[in-house]
Length: 202
Length: 291
Image (cartoon, rainbow over all chains, first blue to last red; front, side, top):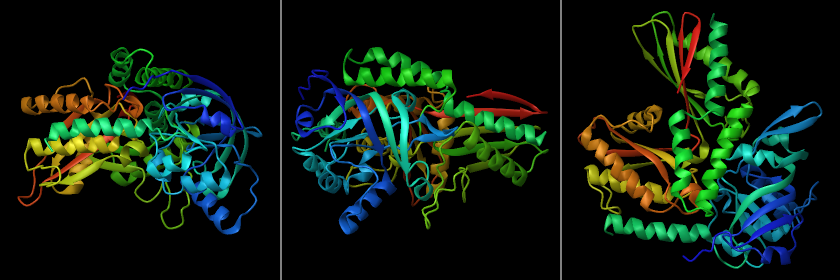
């Protein structure tokens, strides 16, 4: 498909402005530093319900911010929380609402595993990017988490589903869906589907 | 003595969650050089190997999803199922605290996480009686990502032009790999079982995950079939992490069980690159761990 892997490596610091987002292209790599907020299934339902119906004020801002599809293992170490392991979870489960959340909250970057679909790709256009982290690499990724800044909804949602506000340094990522309509996941799926059709003779 | 068995099971959890079996480690390390240097597949496999090394060194979980615990237990005449179930549950609570594990048991009605990996039916335990004394416990930690990409097909399947033979099974396996893409954390192990009823093949597909990827199928025809499936899945080009590449599956395991004349199911259970399995042999108060 003519990907020039590693054509660009970007060192990014949050918050991420629109002009920064537009410089990123599928196939590029990123080292991300700054603030990242974890959110998975329950957190997404919460964000969706509250922004659409109540426009409730949140204790954290997602404007130009980063959402990480991750349910970490966290333990209390004295007064502070310690991240034990923090790799990405499957992003496709959140396909139904991510475009809405990007629109409503002004999110700039989504981090997750294995990419998202057409609805999200359309939602990213001109505004935001999706980056993949290596699935299962929870120790490598945890090393890049410098501290837990805060946590919300821990009691109600439980450890994997809470909003963990993390400070990260040089978090290693791959841009796989950019703000210009390109999706590496979609390209790989098309190539493998063609091969499959050849194998099956259909 | 029984308290010691409980502690040995906590250790079994720690081994499973933090150390990959030797065969899987060797595969991952070797596979890096088969991908293009500097490419995304190379980057992904290098990251995975680095992750495996850190987890083993720090004795911390390889993946934040420490999975659903699934036990296969063979117990001798000196044990009872009810008693072993209680010990496993107690050890599971302790392991959640001590390893630690992420709590992965959620109540469907209330949405509440039980917080200790024990819930109705969890941990999953399959018991079998044996004549020899002592007890053997095999444990797999099955991640949610790879469990979600598993599929069960009913043959014949018109869409895939799959009929009730090996080629029909092959069509299902290839289709499931295409649907999975990067979601199950490739390179994975594909565990395939055909037969009926559906619950039997589901259990057998999990049991089969204890096989080393370095072993051959004892049935020559199935051994050749496994190699062909592995080759074809890898030729789909999905690759490590689903970013494109040659290593989508580490191995394919196939076994066949009996079936009702009217039924023919094919199930594929995938195991992510973090194929976490460990075995405890417990006899006369001594514990031996293998994988």
